[in-house]
Amino acid sequence: MSSQHVKRVDLIFEKIECRDVLKKIVDMEPDAICQELLESDLKGRGGAGFPTGLKWCFTASEKDPVKYIVCNADEGEPGTFKDREILDLVPGKVFCGMAIAGKAIGAKMGYVYLRGEYKFLIPKLNEELKKFHQTMDEFNQNFRIQIRLGSGAYICGEESALFESIEGKRGEPRNKPPYPTKSGLFGKPTVINNVETLVHSVMIMKYGASHFKELGTKDSRGSKVFSISGDTPKAGIYELELGMTVDEFVNDFGDGDTKAVQVGGASGFCVPRKKFEETIIGFEGVPTGGSMKLFNSTRSMYNVLHNYLDFFTEESCGQCTPCRVGCQQLLKGVEAVKRGEKNSKYLDELVKLAKTMKRASKCGLGQSVGNAFGSIVENFKEEIIY
Amino acid sequence: METIIENELVRELANKHGRTRESLIPILQDLVVHNRFLSRQDMVDVARELDISAADVFGTATFYSFLDTEVRGKYVIRICKTISCAMKGKNDILSTIEEILKVKMGETTPDRKFSLLEANCIGWCHKAPAMLINDTPYTELTPRKVTEILREYIKK
Image (cartoon, rainbow over all chains, first blue to last red; front, side, top):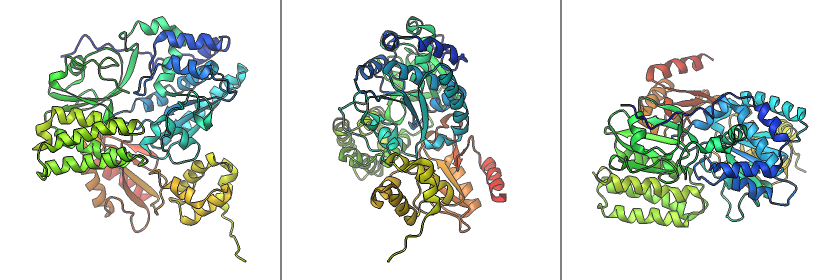
């Protein structure tokens, strides 16, 4: 059964003439660009959802003459592959978005931090970058972009770890504050945006904030590119209007036997069947960077949880104890329960540990492990124990 | 007096990328492409070239899973082990490769042609199971498909 509620949108992949948008931007005042973004209510599409216009305004107001734009293309969240597709199909729009952000804050230099797993995209990106720089020269715009390649570390998707990596160091997160808008790459005011966010900014400048706001809900404006995988006959990339419920989503993308949907990847939340109708996909419900993974009744949620914990245990940067030790203890803990070495009440202790990790970890990795852990243990306790 | 033997490749890469701290990772990445891994000597030479400590170079290199500090084969096969690939039969693909190459996960063939490693999510979840051979992704793998792919690499 196909739902009437899940609306397809074609903004991100729409083929447009980036030159026209850039030409329009050249003559605009930086403040007007920031205001348009603010007006649009665009929230970052990497998962955290910070208002993009605010981020740009804060950075624009910094007095430092050197500022940077960074495109976060270190897409490592299990279940997410939308940025690869965007970079593959419309790379010019990503660069265009960086130029718009550069003009808005007064930056002359931008970096794309591309994950090492996407190295095969480099020739295509370099070709497109050459054309982009020619256009910049043509419009007398002194803005340049460099591409930096990651080397297989999930944590480098965290903004401050990403800066450390570009600076040639171990990708370990920094203490916050100061936030990147004040002290980011090389200690300078920096705007760091996800690939998709930058493309949205292009479309907002092209069609106007009001056009963008016609889509979505009050808390979740616009559309979003979803990476859909798992037990679904329609695995792939879809741009959908925000504001749908998990139930509507499952009606459209499920295989008729969906028992759970992991929204937001390994660091996101697991929504069980009984909560499909009440759960909205968006900032008023479960936020997501785009990963939607469907599980049907043939899947063991213990195996799912174990896979996620194994992932986090390997990818924790090891810098802070709550995350480094916490991930290992959660993994060992569920294994002990499964083997019958610990009784089911031990799971409650592990949930407490996950909550401690949320409060005490230094960055988003350790803070979000508890999302998947808590939601899977709470809703699928029997599958974890037996 | 100890004679310092110049490491031509390291010098060439430092000339290409620069000698500031931010050049470190691009230099290490290129060294891995050339030599298939980072030797202790290469890391010491990079440290000297950039005027930073060898411990710093080693500490940075070992942080990143693609900056190999162990000898790797000409073709590094990285099988995605994250949930989508695990759900879609990653184990069958792995055992097929182990059978063909006669190596276990984490090992390199004696002729140093292939290394078999695991990777955490390579971004092809909708076309699982997937793997990378060096930088090239291969998706929607089946035991038969992976056998054909490996045959082509064995011929190379």
